[in-house]
Image (cartoon, rainbow, N blue to C red; front, side):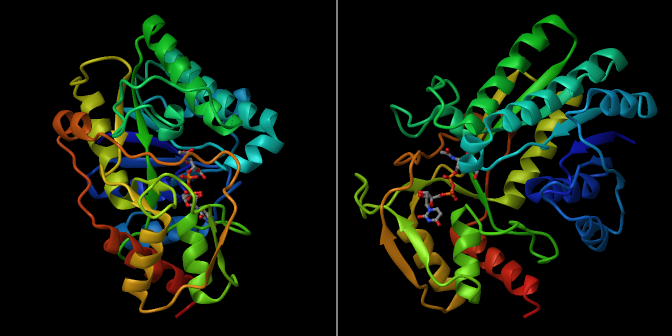
Length: 339
Ligand code: UD1
């Protein structure tokens, strides 16, 4: 059996990936410090798959604890590394916390891999590494732009760390650059669990729809886009999770063409904030209360993925539609509220 360490496996993308891994016959060990997730997620994974993953709670940025973990788990086939801080705004207020957590966790994992001969790692990167790209759709070959946030900078630096480490040690890496993951598992047992006021668009919309927030602020309608609101490439979290299983197999079976290998994970379609609101209204039957306000500092105007390389090389394609994404996000919000 292939034993896989999933860091941050109690989190949003992590939990969906654990489900897909288990359903594909992998044995999963989750390490999570629960700084932005809840222990109950493990029971919900169990309810979906019938398997409770092995779980350890500690901080991967602590070198001693991480080294100790590897002495107890020497038979890992690979690692999928999600554990990281991810709030763009917060990263501007606490940059050192972001650099410490996001960089140290990766470094400690790579040290453990080196020492114990664990060769495969899938890394959670982000389309934020591209900034506002010069050409759309953006391909994996587009250059990194100066980062808009400390968070984005940690993703760029982590990709650089991987690049130099795989040259020096027998480590193989795939960096997956996510566009905007949204939606929830069809069971409505796992989904995004923002603590406090959500930063991201879709949880803010569903919380407004359910009555937890008064209105959505639409950040700017004066962008040079067809309806003036900003455009992103939204991807269903289950499609995203499935890409991790494919990438992991590619590493384990030695099919990578470069090292590290980098893939965009998006649908290739851009949707504006207004189109997301319309999709929500369509699937929920509600009218969403929203107001147009100023642009949010640090936001880019538009980005969507060129998915050709991922589709051809991984043999993976995001399949779920925008309405499926929004309907699953809404079912999840209703399940959270017990409706
Ligand atoms: C950003 C990062 C992404 C990161 C994510 C984590 C980029 C291109 N993307 O996503 O890498 O993982 O943050 O949080 O840097 N919006 C509103 N009202 C709201 C919330 C959002 O109008 O209340 C708009 C935003 O202005 C944006 C869109 O909705 O145009 C999506 O925003 P959000 O969900 O926060 O994601 P990004 O900022 O694209």
